[in-house]
Length: 83
Image 1 (cartoon, one colour):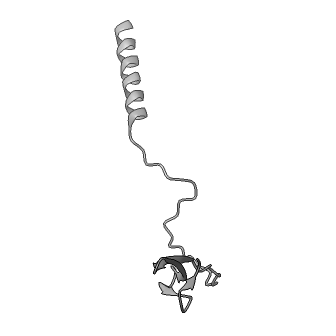
Image 2: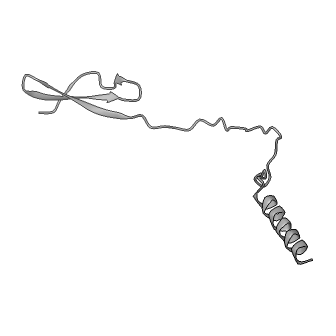
Image 3: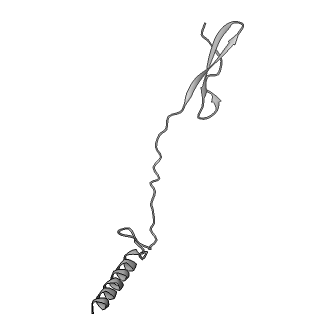
């Protein structure tokens, strides 16, 4: 009787361990296979133009001219003498 009880307890323990170790599929809360549609706002927001001065030395005199990095073109028509 004691041997029968030991075998049954060992089998029960093995079955419990087997069930605990089995991989299970888990899903996040609210998981849905339905297709969802996203709506993006089509508002156009203002963005600043990036500009900077380019410098040049002509006959020992320093000149500057404003350059648009956004549009890759000159903003000032001519070089401006600095010194």
